[in-house]
Image (tube, rainbow, N blue to C red; front, side):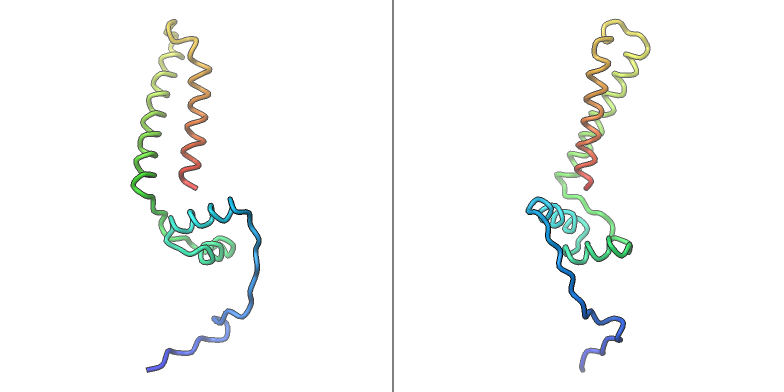
Length: 112
């Protein structure tokens, strides 16, 4: 039995070429892989604002994200103590704030 013919509006007739840097190519491949898509499928869905499949993380990424969340929680607890006026921790306030921002940046990069 032959494959059914596609409708005219389903046939892909046009090709678009896109140049990217090596770093961008690697990043696109990683993100597409996390969604279980090819790079072309990922780009098409993003550009046409179609729904992406559920994002999947590797075990390592999941473990890193959990650990970063724990570290962030610890920093929040320490910051709370500093803000409550504990004199022994007062000097750490700015350093903790900086560390918290860095952890958020790392977490955001892991989710890309």
